[in-house]
Image 1 (cartoon, rainbow, N blue to C red):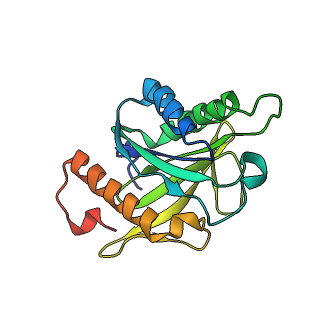
Image 2: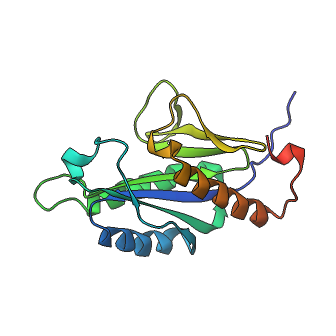
Length: 185
């Protein structure tokens, strides 16, 4: 029988999508009050792999990623997603009930990148309180993060994978681990 043990803490990340770059700064101010210091900010990237959000948020969407210095328990991702859902509601277009931004929280562990969502689908696992999780990327030794069959198109981009591999290196250093075979699935 496997012994139940506490999971290793994970690196909290946040993806933001909006046509209004100024909203990224406003979200950063709000989320750092709750989850602390940001230790990584990506450049602002074009969000062009799908038009899924254009009807709701407009054209010329941009994407930015953040990560946080403090590590979290993986179970805390439920509270993070509920908080980001409330932030999305606070930033609705006035009188239109349409989002101005999309917030995608998740975390990086040594073996995977997990995203939290409120939408169920066949490859997602229910966590509780209306929140699901999916393994978006898997880490492969010598190859870095790799997309899976259901990985979102933008998360397959080389520039995104480079960001996530960099964040994994930061996380690895935070754990104080030396590179070992068992660390690198």
